[in-house]
Length: 115
Length: 110
Image (cartoon, rainbow over all chains, first blue to last red; front, side, top):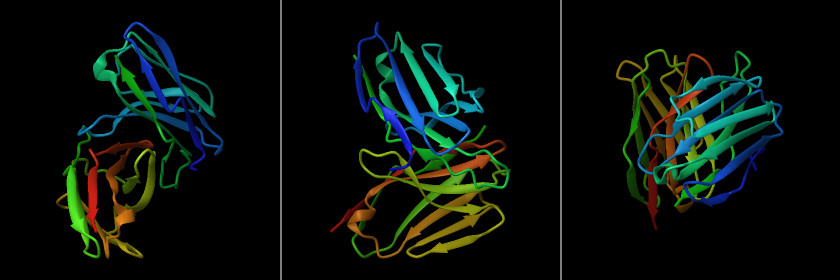
């Protein structure tokens, strides 16, 4: 148990559906991340939020829309996805204070399948 | 941009040592990390090394850093079946963003 909870753990959706992934952390962290994990590819940084403000958008297509209503919650809204978007989506958090090692705490991931 | 490379697979026999290698491109990395991902789970920090160090040992784990060649390795002594997992190398640059490699899937053969 890392203190970062992701729901749902598994999601199957059609290309015309709209769904959302949710991430919640109770670690008192102020930075939250979305990563995409695909087979045989580097773990891909998608979005970063620091103190609820988006500080990184790593050229992610607009069919992925993040939302960070507060420092403890992060959402990834999905709309009109493609089959190649099927992957494991990992949420992570950290405390961005200077002097810390920057260790990320990951959730268990949401396995997304787009039909 | 940041580029972290690892081989995809490694198989070792139980009791042998495993060595997982990683190369990175950003010479301004401050910390380098090894994360472990067990089946059905997220990534967990295994160990890390500050960029001004060249070695760190933690029980069965030894991390070696060659900053000149931008090469990081993780050695696991007396590898056990419970060590079977995916091992990710990562570097921290600038802000708190970590960039990861593909992961190396370690299979331990009994």
